[in-house]
Length: 286
Image 1 (cartoon, rainbow, N blue to C red):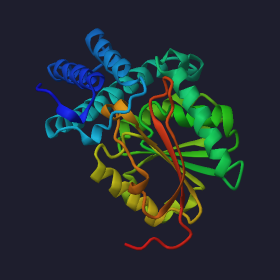
Image 2: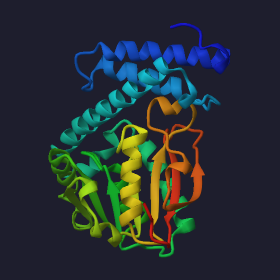
Image 3: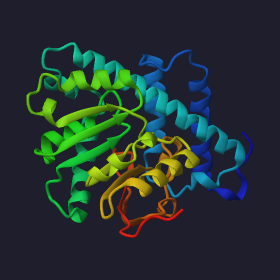
Image 4: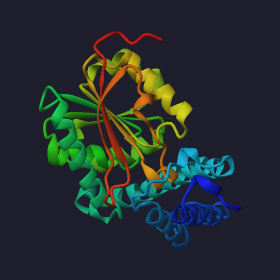
């Protein structure tokens, strides 16, 4: 790869070259299912992108932008396969949730759950919301499990995923828990097909990998703006700096129909940024 010129510093150029090299290696793998090679490369990628960096990945040259968009897709696919693998493994135990700390990023979800609950608590009108939606919950819905177990102990969580097999794995995880099996519901539904039902939720979480590019993400956000209840909260995951090589970046300007209340960029091993926004009281006009 040639020089990036005056767009980035030397440190940032090294970072971009390292990311592109890791992408080249990842793109030659026959499968992204968990394996020594896959785990090593994704660990390298995360450790490369984790340190806080002033880089604006959206301003990089076109070739690097193309690699970034492909890398986000590879990360999404690998994350889904990793979660499916561990969800099936955990599901083989009589009480799956007793073994949930086997998942290698479990402590990250504990931290992220605490962070999101703390942020949400600053803005929510009802300290104990009756119903929360999580869009893009996947086969290992750790955010819902952590929030329901540790922070919101009376709330019902409606988990939406377009993939029926992911929901089957997820449902199996909580089936043996008398409390969570009552409060964790799973919907095999494309959220773009949900209209009036979205107004039932006081809080809606949008997973980082729902909408892998800005255009698709905006379509989902616009749909939520049209159908969420006025005054309800949207908890949205984004990325900042070099972490934008791993996840799509959402800017406050991508949220018409919402009042952005706070943007939080973690500096530790919690990778995702968190945006909290309130659905406008005025009807969202297209």
